[in-house]
Image (cartoon, rainbow, N blue to C red; front, side):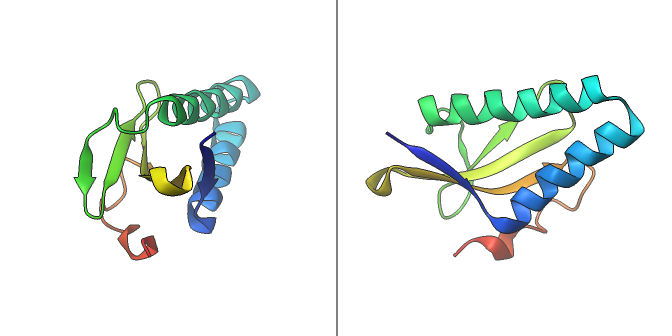
Length: 102
């Protein structure tokens, strides 16, 4: 079974985005954001190659519909693992996270 892990900085971005929605919107919006991320992860784990490669080496992008965020991830089938490298707000410089790729 494929597992999912976050780069430490991506996990921090996820937490910061959740805190932002909790503080600036409402607990319901924060909960909806968490649900959207969990749904995205479930979809990625079910079909990791569904979203196209947008960066090398084999980095794919999942775009949220309701929130202005994207997930950048890589599927490593031989290790049965998906790694999320960024939980990026669409207003950020697109390439800021690339130094996280090992």
